[in-house]
Image (tube, rainbow, N blue to C red; front, side, top):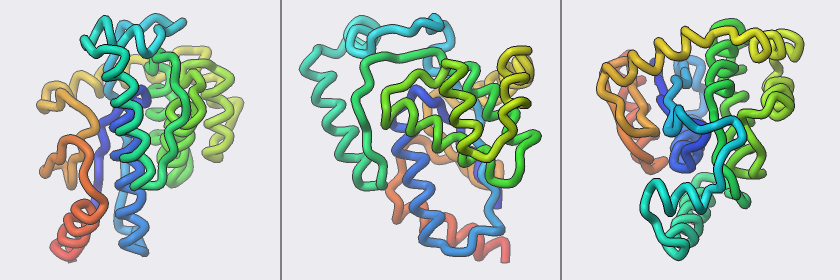
Length: 213
């Protein structure tokens, strides 16, 4: 079974959705027949490298009041705890394109499961620790944690490798109708948009695996 997860590092609901999938896969036990591929999507493709203050961004771009922003953070923390993810303090929002390039490389060239480990490390760095997922030092640290080659990761980042491949992939998912994240596509046919409860994901995955026999 193949699961494509279209998501962005900057998206807090993606952090919850990815960890919900992790918990569901844990419930399945042996997941050797499950392939998870993380696909690129940018919520803020025009975000400058220096980033923007998160509260200011949400009030000016989304129209949320400071009180609504804080209430949203509280809700995210609670939802995160239900899937084993602890949100930290995030004061900034940054450009994530280089993170997507590194994730694409990990899927193309890395060892088995390296892309998944890198995705989890990046989500933890940003949503858990408030660090810049577009900064080279953070990206390289996460790559090493994921078991990837640091020298090759640096080469990917500094030489702009996989830039067009990521742009093409983003466009392809948009053409397939993905307009919001997280979106999970099961076996390239069944799409689940938004955060799904762990129990719902587990039941669906068991059904799909049984159907594949």
